[in-house]
Length: 411
Image 1 (cartoon, rainbow, N blue to C red):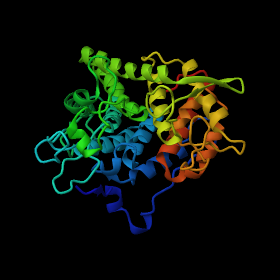
Image 2 (image 1 turned 45 degrees about the horizontal axis):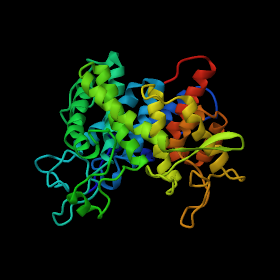
Image 3 (image 1 turned 90 degrees about the vertical axis):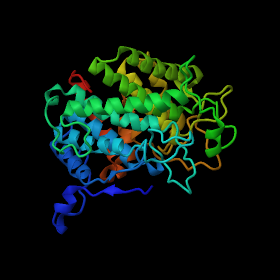
């Protein structure tokens, strides 16, 4: 399996002098998103390669996964149809890049599962596939959800000609996404990763799985960052089914699984007071006592998943429960020089990177500590021109801040 990129049509038709990709733009720190910023984002994303496989997790947290999430943020801000169409191009590619049940790769189960392998086949050996599939499901379901929220487009044909035969109209496309994602959820995620009694996530309990990973990794709590990837899929599919009004039992199950995960997380964090502010200390995986302290790289997925669940208002997470994360960033992880230690307890292990920045996925915490926004903005300024994730995060939260200042509803 080779990683192949689809060349954008715009590049094939453009004159040679126009082949340079435009830069992303953020014009200011505060205020509504501008027409210039939106147009720059469109120009950049039109020319971004669309991945056709998940090698090296390209469709999870790689360029493809980051791109579709960034597009979703911008669609939420603008309701722009062209941005939605670009998002659909990525969602189509992700669904089309799923393992084929007839001709695809053999997974560790011995079957051609409906998953997104992140490795190339080697000498016919079975491939690993696991929790990361939840994030791909979440990305595609995000596109479906935004389509379903836009009733104006329901019976309008998507302008791409339906190259994969996923559905000619926007609604048909969304319904197909949801139906296919449920198939992967039913046949793989629920079967192997969710305990039916507690609805908690545990690593796959099978010698076949350990044969492609390592001995002793089965039947253990799934690390928090991977739980948030799985929650991404379940939460957004639940939201899609709610919009469709088609399967109340499935919604109930999916939401119960997400709630079991976030409740487990909050039951395992340790509260502490630093500089008169309540902060959190937590680990890479559920454990007692806390030993393997979470790092910033994995922690960004924790924060992104918890913030997404908080925003939904459906899992019992309050602003008071989220604020200590923001305090942890400001009063535990931040150094006197204004950088951030890469562990959530403020320690620096010998193999850790030196203190540095925090990316866009941490920016949700600005909602609970507004003073954090300009700090993270400055941290990410150098990434704006070429990072859809950083740029969309800045614009999305700036938009929310501007709307809140005017007493308006924000996405």
